Length: 418
Ligand SMILES: *[C@@H]1O[C@H](CO)[C@@H](O)[C@H](O)[C@H]1NC(C)=O
Ligand SMILES: *[C@@H]1O[C@H](CO)[C@@H](O)[C@H](O)[C@H]1NC(C)=O
Ligand SMILES: *[C@@H]1O[C@H](CO)[C@@H](O)[C@H](O)[C@H]1NC(C)=O
Ligand SMILES: *[C@@H]1O[C@H](CO)[C@@H](O)[C@H](O)[C@H]1NC(C)=O
Ligand SMILES: *[C@@H]1O[C@H](CO)[C@@H](O)[C@H](O)[C@H]1NC(C)=O
Ligand SMILES: *[C@@H]1O[C@H](CO)[C@@H](O)[C@H](O)[C@H]1NC(C)=O
Ligand SMILES: *[C@@H]1O[C@H](CO)[C@@H](O)[C@H](O)[C@H]1NC(C)=O
Image 1 (cartoon, rainbow, N blue to C red):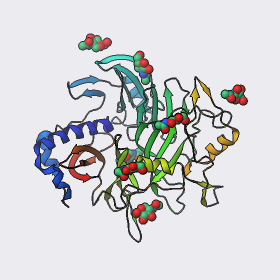
Image 2 (tube, rainbow, N blue to C red):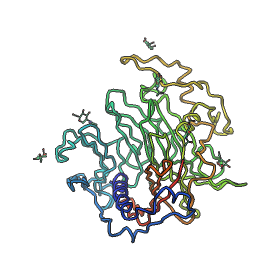
Image 3 (cartoon, rainbow, N blue to C red):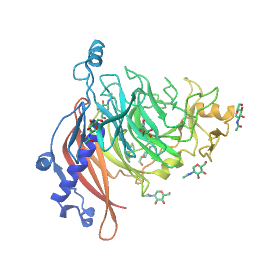
Image 4 (cartoon, rainbow, N blue to C red):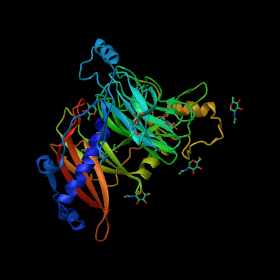
């Protein structure tokens, strides 16, 4: 339950700490260079620390519904060499659709999903396989969303060892589709961070090993998208996205040699302003540093209309390649009849995945930078200040041991005016 629950917990604790420090966050404070930092100790009295697995908890009504794996599943998990700690049910998908709660757990490396009544979490309507919807391992980072049409988009490892990552659509009425399998140009050891349903597209945010970077292993952060009405190819790209594209996100400190915060950890989307806040860090093996960069959705969309970055074969260089379809629009699915993609369209869709343009944040200098910190979560609140809307950014560092819930021990608030 790590992701959603840490955030829920974070948000509820933030509410409390705002009540506790009402004056420190007024609009006038935005001009101040230093920002209020609230230590874990200070908010301690308002925090309830807990660790949980094998259960779904509801905060408001304090419901706790057990959801454990059965003994046979656990035994099978041990026999595959997994530990007692790993062979539990870690809830990784928790989505509300209408009056239903759709939730998936790792279930001792045998992922399973249930559809429950929101009004009574014990009442399970359907139980389906969690494969391709939820990771097997509690260590793997994944994200999922449900559309209004009832399709589930999940970005997760699809297999037991975690070597087959994919962005996969299932349920609903549209055919299941995925990213091309074992193709590092599509996804290269990704860590999925977040996903959003925006207009005709679903967007995915993640970090992955950069295929286009040929000297040494480097991680880059990406925004990717697919059309929600994609129905896959015929003969070519069968059961596979024909509209998958991705672009690099740049979050760096400018300079003669820019200092890059390459690794996206968390995002927060403000739909009314079309802004995506991201927390980026350096690699775990280098000096610790974090930054907040803000991306305009229109800048991301614009990158997708530009040229692609293309590599003819594994020995050739990555070069810009003009976009064959710069006025790209999602196709029209008309009562199940799809306007056929030509063979040429499909070849292009298979060939061109990565955009040449790098998406730049709204400000050249990141909105916030801090050395010696690794922030793991970001949340943003827009409040009416005296003369403008003020964005209050909450950052948290979290010890999120993959097997236990994260512990927020350092909370920092900033505010920005736009
Ligand atoms: C959950 O149940 C509802 C009502 O039966 C159904 O419409 C919906 O498709 C189900 N969702 C999933 C993801 O199974
Ligand atoms: C919730 O659903 C369970 C299982 O169907 C049932 O046993 C229980 O009585 C229900 N609880 C309430 C409060 O309706
Ligand atoms: C998942 O993300 C966390 C936080 O960035 C990281 O510590 C962890 O190593 C990631 N898991 C895997 C399997 O890479
Ligand atoms: C990233 O942004 C920095 C700072 O504005 C800039 O110097 C650098 O060229 C950019 N890098 C890429 C790859 O766009
Ligand atoms: C985002 O882009 C749109 C369209 O280019 C622009 O109108 C808007 O001002 C931008 N927002 C910010 C915060 O830069
Ligand atoms: C979505 O796609 C349709 C069909 O291509 C297009 O007419 C419509 O303008 C698009 N909507 C948005 C919000 O871009
Ligand atoms: C799409 O292509 C198939 C096979 O070539 C053909 O049978 C079908 O009529 C085409 N559909 C449309 C809408 O053009």
